[in-house]
Length: 396
Image 1 (cartoon, rainbow, N blue to C red):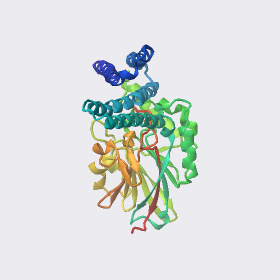
Image 2: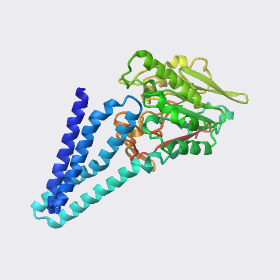
Image 3: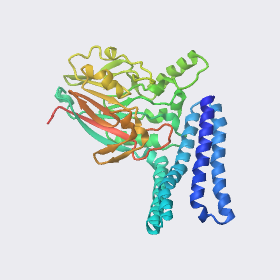
């Protein structure tokens, strides 16, 4: 209750402070009373929305809470990020005017307006078309010990769908299935966070997800959100039933769960193993994984491991004979810059391995930024990813 009240007060103060500073900077353009009234009506509208959200969201006991929170966060960012950028940059223009540097002040003022408009358009794209504008990341992974029959083996990795974040008319899942199947993969793997908390989030999408096809099967491990630990359940039994239903839904959608287990992948006389651990992350994230159990019986073979949280790689996995670990979890924070080989996201300051391929002492990790979203209902500069991994033993 205290946290909710803090968010309410902080939200109202941020909107009021932001709009007050903006008004002081642009009031000379609002000389007509109608313009001033419209400006403050806009501000009051957002404060009213924050107030309504404070009382509305706690009444939602199901997956729709995530949907509405995401929409609210996105709309606030859409309007108040440009405003904040304008206020900060335009402050320099105001200072230059006081110093009688009028030409420079005009340039900076126009620059502030241009940056604000650009940021609005970028965020708008991110919460509309950008959220399901999938990018196929093609990554060749060299494993010296890989059996010859697996040379060129193609794995599609999916992760972090967070199905409860979408409305029922979301086009992204159908598009995802079509794009994955068009790649004609040998294997499809999913590395956790299919849902936000509730097994029922899968219900609208099961029929579409079971259309995913791969020659050697579709497999999955669990992520931290799949256990429903972010919800206050009436009883422990209710939470346990939710998890049981989640596994039933995954099976209905065609996913073979690897819960601290492994499965052999056989081509001709050659065998490699696909292993999967339950979520294992650093606090506050839960750790249900049992890596030794997951690797039991794989000795002497190439092992590919599904583990949701990339921090598990350095914490434990690199001490075991795992050639390649596939992870997700970070979303690359759904915001950043990616131009060619240059990548940056605030996520790097939390997860040293947050996006792409990493290697240390012969152990490799690939972290996908995933296909879905949580909190902010979109993507900015970090397109949702379909990963196509091609295995090879031709190491240069």
